[in-house]
Length: 80
Image: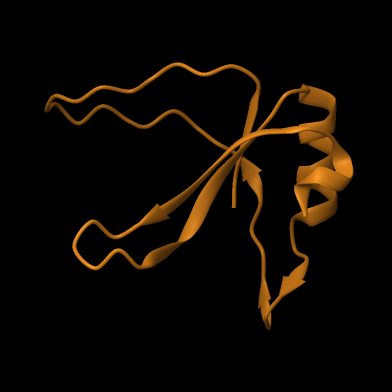
């Protein structure tokens, strides 16, 4: 769906760590910011399997203490 707007660099579908089932959202990283903006504008609100998609630019995760590693990737990332 995102490839019609440009090159998709990476996709991460988020799954439940206990069940392995999809949690209903994921991240799409595109190589070009303009293409990412076009994809967000065109896909946000689009109907898929009877549900409206909510597509927006990913925001940094808030730090609530605790440890963990967050990698640093390049390009534009959209949450859907």
